[in-house]
Length: 110
Image: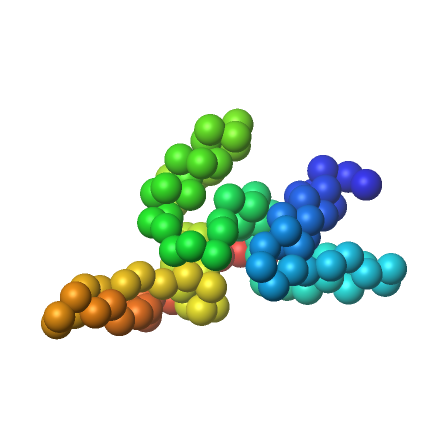
C-alpha cells in the first residue's frame, strides 16, 4: 500500500473509532468513497476531527502537533462547509446557537 492509499486507510480507521463507525470492507468500497469526498490533504486533516465542533484553526494546530504542516489555505474548511461536513455556530438570542454555513464556492484542482 502506497502513502496515498495509507492516508485514506488511516482516515477510515479513525472514522471507525467514532460513535457511528466506518468499518472496512473486503471490496475496499469505503476507501473509494473517502477518495470521492476528500482530497489527500483534506483526508490528512480529517484524521484530527471528532464529533465535537471545533474551529478549523484548532484542527490545524492538532495536525501540526502530529507532524503534518498543512497549507495555510482555507480551501479545506470552505470545501467541508460546502459539503455539509463543517459549519459554524452563531450565538443567538437567549444563548441559543444556530448553524451558519458558508456560501463560498471552493475551486480546487483534482
